[in-house]
Image 1 (cartoon, rainbow, N blue to C red):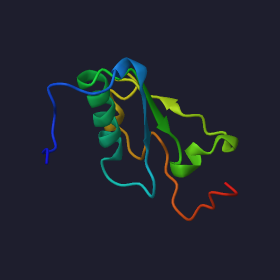
Image 2 (cartoon, rainbow, N blue to C red):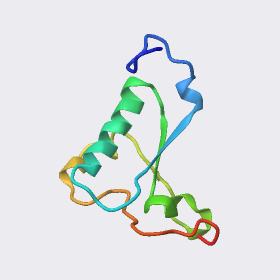
Image 3 (tube, rainbow, N blue to C red):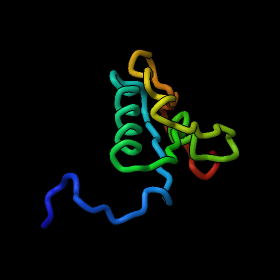
Length: 100
């Protein structure tokens, strides 16, 4: 068994991948801080350059609903920890995935 944690070598080419962040459920304290930390870690520590935030929970994953994903960069999240709410919006409640 291998313990969790950072590795000396990674097994993917960060320049070839994109990462997405989706938050589901209601708002919670510190959500923007978590989004910021994920973006900073992916970009600064892992070298990932394409990071997207999907808006309004699962609804952000349904193309026909028209919620374009946000491109997240260290600059775009630099001060989000000073804001209330969530920069990605929230969506609480049941969702029929077949009907959107």
